[in-house]
Amino acid sequence: MFNYRALDPEQLEYVAVATLKEIGPGERLSFEVDHRSIVLFNIAGAFYAIDDLCTHDGGPVGEGEVEEHAIECPRHGARFDLESGKALNLPAVVDIAAYPVRVEDDQILIGLPRENNPV
Ligand code: FES
Image (cartoon, rainbow, N blue to C red; front, side, top):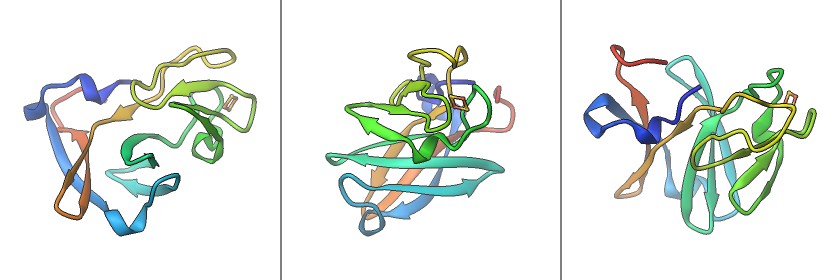
């Protein structure tokens, strides 16, 4: 998996996925975009987006408990950093994809890799 936040902006294509009204502080939103299942979090007004598929065994990580900036997969307890996607503890050893998030007017956009970039 990949931390797409680390890519240069020109390597990304920003896609609108929600409006600010749709996801208030403390809320989360799951959606499909570009054949990816992604979950978006609003944590005290800061937005984070990761794949909604645990790298350990495909669990619905987006349904897990959030503590500060980490989420715990409800299936076996692996935790991931919401900003970098880094796997923080076993049983996950592979990071989860993390996407940059941008707000323009009332739209929330996430950065997806352009087709010629690694997935
Ligand atoms: S599927 Fe997420 S910890 Fe196992």
